[in-house]
Image (cartoon, rainbow, N blue to C red; front, side):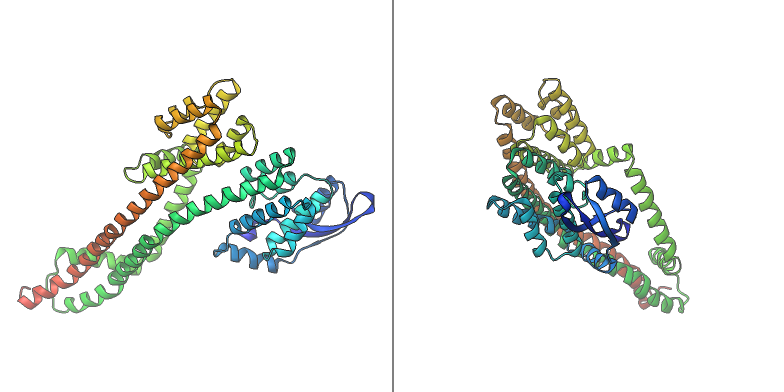
Length: 409
């Protein structure tokens, strides 16, 4: 949330040659802002905190759906067009500042532009905004600056991010309908248990009849949910809190990822996604001109699965010692022997980048088919489960009525 972010300061400063520059900087205090500016070789003449009204508004918009990712993709795409048209970096950034509608992101780009004007590298300026630009982005920009292919590099990054967003959108689209069914089903069960069933039971209790066991059990559940709902909320909250704390530990992260990869139905799909992410990221980094060792270091930071991270780190160590990378990947158990063999062939033939790209595309295509089939299978399964619980509640309510109608008290 925006409330956890350090304040931003608008500054006016003197750069080399007495040139006046303006911009924004993120710091803990005005003193820290001035100190940060002095480290860049410019002298601040005025520093004032930016009003938080637009910051809060922008942060809320990001929180409720207008994610930062879309801003970054559009920014990267437009920057690649401008740079490939032989427009200077500072001029390209100035053009982008005029086009950006999000106030927070505009402040970020303004600060980056001003720092580039003072002689700081583009990659170093981006490095202070890791909430927007991840390690893959910054590492590729650094290579692009060093090789003089910044425009082409940003075009590559833009395509990579667009591809990743399409994959995420497919997963989200496939999950929307099942999630809606589950939400509606749970709502219906809670409504029947806490509102409808108690009213029916009250009338039945007036008849002094002996209630069936299933009705008594659901009555107890209903009573507890109505009078002690806060206890349910507290218990769920504590479980979630404890689980999150545990998952942040090394052992917890390992058990989580190990469980995800070995799940009966979803495990193979998750494994495909992990390997596909590894292959596409490594292929993109190598294609941008980054060395194998540095590419593996970056990939290890963004893989997201501790088992895969361990395999990537071992592969990097082998590369530094002059060995291959296929063996530790095969031994991890995440990558299948067939894919590990393809990586080995790519290494020996000098076509590793192309081979990794083919692996990624193949796995993504296979994953799409699996997601469609899982979605088609989950929908009727969820409906059956929800219908079972609703039927159970209906049985608990109707069984006493049927007994009363038949004269069985």
